[in-house]
Image (spheres, one colour):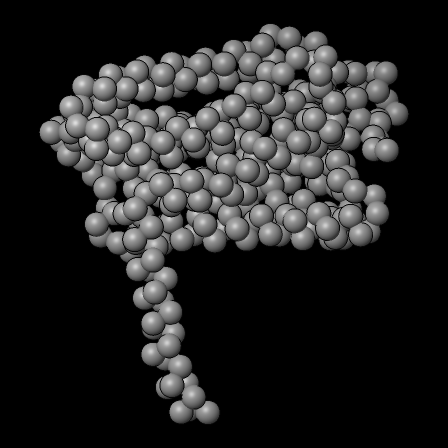
Length: 335
């Protein structure tokens, strides 16, 4: 059973606000020591896999000059957002599982919420931009270098990160400015907006509606742009006369479609599911799907379907091992 700690002054909403709460209690994933250690090992394995996969992609793109193209530049930014996302939620969850605690300070919760929103929103923006990149590459290949030059790519990526920062700052400030009088227990293993709003005793429906409206407009606007872009892509691909050309064009879009589908479907269902089917176990499973699975699987999806990236990764790893072997006799001689 999850114990939620309530404020004794909960009957007087005007006397309770978020500034009076010094810490929150996160959801305890297990109550036996064996299961807690099992969760710690599971989180550690997923974290290392995500760090390794995304780190290899960042290293390969940064070190391989033939990968300095718009597609791989945005892929590098996507890997950075995945790294940030996994490093925001997992360390605290691993700490709580290892040391049998479930608390997080109010400032720590605000920081975790801000950075989680920041990296999650940046990832969505970057996936939208990558869709535009694929559209220009397939529909206007002759103007690809002109439309998506190095300066245009840098400005577009900077706009995505800056917009994500402003969006996250707005929502974090709005969430923690609401008075909280329904206790300080969160039904999630990390700080999440819906869980914090459940603790609010404010009747400020206008502010809550504004938060939802801004998010809906943002998500729907990007989604419409993505659908429109892929309609143009499919129309252009179907006009390619050779089957080999169509297959090559589709193969460049499949990783992006897989990652986008995984990210959008899990996130949308988590936030838009009917209240009638909501439960703590389902909320936990869905949160793991959209916050943990994409950062861990994105590197695998992109590397398996991209021969250039696979070749660069192979060159990077074989070069590292060759350097290590060349240094080994020197090290032995010095012993």
